[in-house]
Length: 273
Image (cartoon, rainbow, N blue to C red; front, side, top):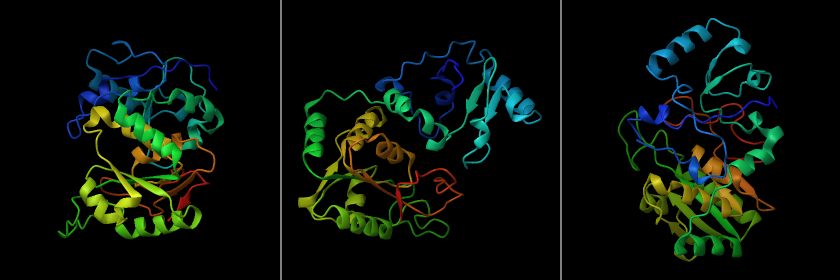
């Protein structure tokens, strides 16, 4: 622990998100960190000032950098040894629980999602807690069935992965009920091929502004079959029900839209298929 204050920049990254056009949503979580001021966002001319800090940092020792840019996707142990003085900017995904395993309870509390208050989500969550529930996430980075040369759903977890994952779940929780989350629900239903009596499609939280509600619902399930997606990674990690079993894609992908399988990504206790 460094005793440093965490400040969240809610604007800079979103202002240049031309692909997904997402907005800041940590307001739906329990985190109490203050928002960055214009000065802390390096305004005016933030892009130029960030560029200069990055350029200078690449010539400095890691521990002396004011802006620490993630280098690659693998877990970087240098971050754990960092003892910053003054303001330090972190720019990256840092997708590994190894960065915060020693303060896991604090992170769980900070990222506790404020439940949506509509009847549909609350009733769905109650059902998830009343049955042996499995959250299944199918993320389509490529259009399903895309067979063009160089595409062929190259970034999607294959149907064969989901077949093996469901067989694994059935071995530990026979008769479980599956709750399916996807950006393309109709294609996802065909991909996992479960009978309707054992599968509920979650498709009512539409639009990015309601994504937090899907994440909250995922965290209410007992078991998890995640996609090669950080969204369901967090849904599984935030779930705290005793006996939780998480199955994740075990392949490595270091190209395209869906980087996956890098060092530190998956907790040791998760099953990799």
